[in-house]
Amino acid sequence: MHAYRVPRELRAELNELPSEELAERMDLLKSDVQARLDACLAQLDLPEPAVTHLSRKTPAEAIKETVEHLQPDLLVMGSLSRGGRAGVMVGETAERLLDRLDCSMLTIKPDDFESPVPRD
Image (cartoon, rainbow, N blue to C red):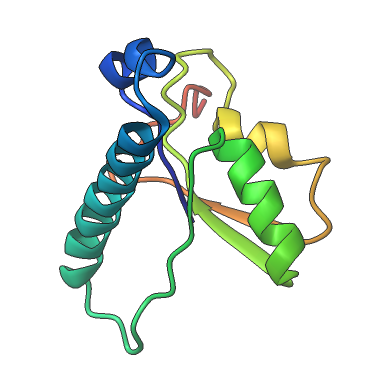
């Protein structure tokens, strides 16, 4: 599952573009996002090809919608916790989803993650 945004410069032009050109630009954007995602996945040693889902919604909305559609037992998601708020351990998107999903959630931190909670 990958949620992506429409670039600011394209958002500024949305109301001014003819519908055919807008559709073409949005298709190109989606193709570019898919190609970059595929390139990242190609670097992994996966036993099976990955099945990807792209969405232009917010990450929390896109994940919730995909979980509702696929109905997994477990959602595994990466979590960066970039918000800078002390005590935020799971990340903003994961926090938004905690009480909105009908499945368990496992969040995985990057290797260099340092907890804001003192170890004393």
